[in-house]
Length: 224
Picture 1 (tube, rainbow, N blue to C red):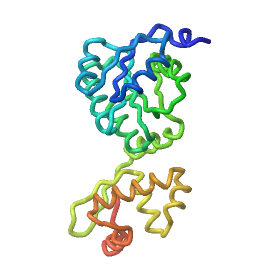
Picture 2: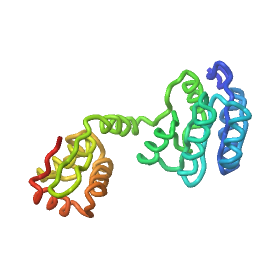
Picture 3: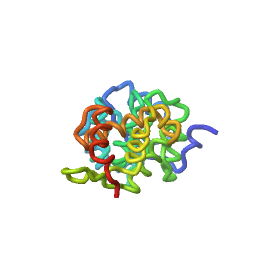
């Protein structure tokens, strides 16, 4: 199957990136498979999206926060467009931020150019373009939104924890290590540390020993 045959119907793609090399690389990878336009900064990317009404926008700006903000603005003004955020380094938190902004894809800059026409085709069918390694993180995020619980502590306002944050805190109180918690819950150690950090921020503590002391002096807290 040729690159041209890989995308039906022919897609209109906006390539928005700081670097000319990135724009050129994506355009060449999609040659014959899509009609491409380009933008070199966030303002021109939004203007081009409004003007061109693309099917797909590939957004790659440094630092990553700029790409996510540009993606969110494009999505708000051209909701029909499928937006893919490209990044130099895959990062779980950046991925979740991109999804929250409305992006339907998140890919490394080093993605095989031969795959890009197939990625565009899948986006045209309404599918997502997400590295397999990040799927568990997305599932964990969705689960965390469910089963939120309030942690009541003496002489403090109740603190809302996600279901996953509560699970992590409960296992910490049982003396489990980060690695053990990750293995038990089927998530990465990085994700466990992210949940612990979030709980620290909500409770105003700076370390796990401080967190455990706070819980111990408050009857381990009451979840409801």
